[in-house]
Length: 390
Ligand SMILES: *Cc1c(COP(=O)(O)O)cnc(C)c1O
Picture 1 (cartoon, rainbow, N blue to C red):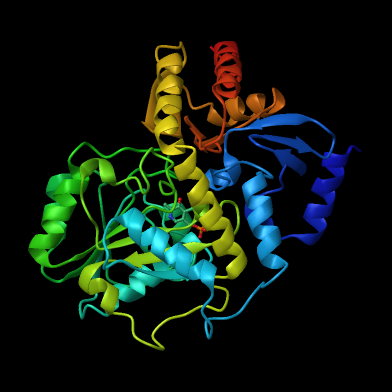
Picture 2 (picture 1 turned 60 degrees about the vertical axis):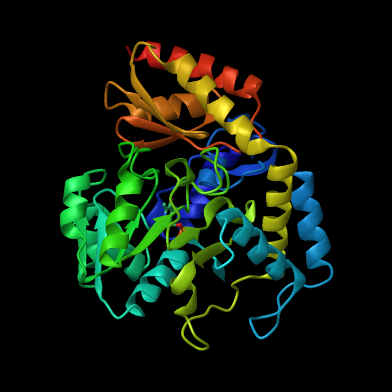
């Protein structure tokens, strides 16, 4: 039995079965590369699912986390500290609205739970979300999630949530009324297979929600932190939502989520109405601030767009690939056969970590510091693998 097989055995005898048994056990990483316990090297094109924005063991993360934990680890929300203030002010500037106020938590599900609870404080209770949406796994976030396979075993969920087809402007205008408390959407449905709405959808959603006085929530958990080439993934339609939820890349690899409310929605939470013990921890906030500073200083967002376009143009027209979609470095490679699981397994074998988002889509969400040379190695490898299945 090799080290990876040993890890599988240990996993099975000690962990619950909700994730399936991982085939590979990772030991360390550097930049966009990771090594498994057998010493095999991989180029990481998934980045811990859109999370390790700066890759593995990045010096600015190592420095910020080590220096913070060595002076102040956890304080609880009875106390303020410099890193949480700096992060809230960074986010206010990134959202571009002085009225923006942050609530910090530890995950995407919690950020969406917070938005869901905020919507109740508007005095309305009806919610609209979309088919295929992924907003998290806790009972409230799952009630917003639009995927029956994930929901059905856990019914009944929270009442009053209506799901409509993603990207359908007419259906959206009809479903959202003056009774709707909130409409929640992802700028791109990442988990569902990097599904893009038609141009103008976010703008139409902003218009309709302003007409009806409905809180517009953008779930930027996966598209946020520069992944699409803008900070949160909605800016290309030049809208300002009422609420933005963040997690995944926010902490630069550390667990951190945020629910940012803007304008009158920033005034709805009052002392005692919501909270979480670890939210806004000094260590996670220090990592987030270091990540944001680095993204700005190195102009990473601009570079993302170039890298994403390079992937799209190099893979367009390859036999076996019907479409390459997405924005910046959130990319869905659509295969013309339902063989994404096999293709992903072959790519792992060849030393490239990718994710089969569904039967026919390979999702890429690499660290934003991935190099063109690493992307070119991947392009060669996937062409070879896809051709071999032709
Ligand atoms: C991953 C994800 C979530 C859930 O985040 P967790 O940290 O896993 O709870 C919510 N929304 C979107 C868009 C996501 O991609």
